[in-house]
Image (cartoon, rainbow, N blue to C red; front, top):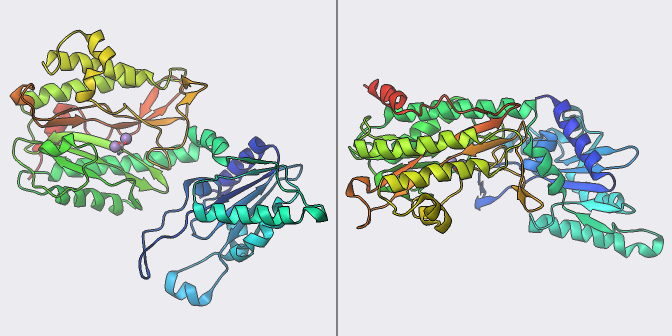
Length: 434
Ligand code: GLY
Ligand code: MN
Ligand code: MN
């Protein structure tokens, strides 16, 4: 880890703030029951600016002529380190993570009062965490209580996420390297799933294969709960039960990606449990693949965020007419939104430290133009539930194909190409099963 990368990000935020003070805490630990905790995951904004992995920590940035970056963290504690492991302590943390100064987190409340007093603006994510909001309001009120002694509380409270979201939206070289790694590990996990799926196996067994590959390759966790959905389950968008057995003749939809070094991948592949697409499955699959190709062609610098979605929609809607899922004209179906019965989500989202990553999708009411360095998913789908007015051969076919794209100078690069996607490649890989 290069501490200069994080110092540069703090310097950029300080520049964007112009004046005032920013307070950026990390995530709290959460008790699951008694003395068991949920797995700890740092706050993405905090980590983006520090690379510091410990809980109970907070960054304070003071803008101005001599900008300062301060870290508050846990003190060394020999007894606690026996139970819970290493803690840097402020001195080592300042050095290792490149802060101007570092203090015990126990001193934060008093220090905040000193640091906030006289600042024109407080940059903070009000409303994100009630406990931190309480601490910040208490510090502001203590400053206000000192007005007769000449203290002055900030006139403005600004949401620090606005500047940080813009920064996080365009990935730097370190982030792109991290995202490539998450994408590579996740693609390997999908290949493993294709090699191990078979009639009679359970969805959770395939989930276990994905998790095995994630952890084997050093990813810390899944980036979101994996969806391993056989047959009709593929038509439940957020199916995470993963409890059913896989049936010969069904498709299997897997939406799974790992988090590696704080960056997410988000891949969906759909393939036949028995290794061979039926003609009806092939029709729907090729339609979704064509929609994805059209969407990918719509991802380039200067193109609007929505271009990929609009392109995918046209292909999907025409396909739904051709497959007799819908009737009428293409423009009519697009206008009425009738396609939503079979395609009810959007074609992508920003991707980064969070699977649905930070960043606005519109600027001044218009879809924002893409820019080199942005990373997004491209994930059209078609979900056909059983119904009397739907051709019988198409019942319970749910297909989504999801890749991760990096906007480049001339278009985009698909980071997740190592997960097989064409019918030929999928069937060839599955034919190698023992
Ligand atoms: N896996 C979450 C999504 O595709 O948006
Ligand atoms: Mn996604
Ligand atoms: Mn997904």
